[in-house]
Image (cartoon, rainbow, N blue to C red; front, side):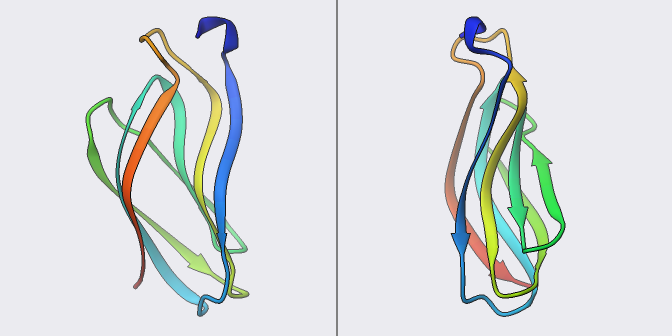
Length: 99
């Protein structure tokens, strides 16, 4: 809703017990509006990949884990949009792979 934007926030899951190294998060997703990102942080550098379209697409996010812990999820930075229900994102089939 326009009266609720821009919207800023973060939702993530903390995954523990990981081996240090390189990881890849794979998922399908879409977004209506702007300012929405897929998020990964392997206890170091934060990685954000912007949702590209309002059609379901496949995404891959590469990141490095140190200290055995990672946060994976989504972040909105000044998210908004003129479309009905914007800002809005949808994701499915999230997988975490070692590289």
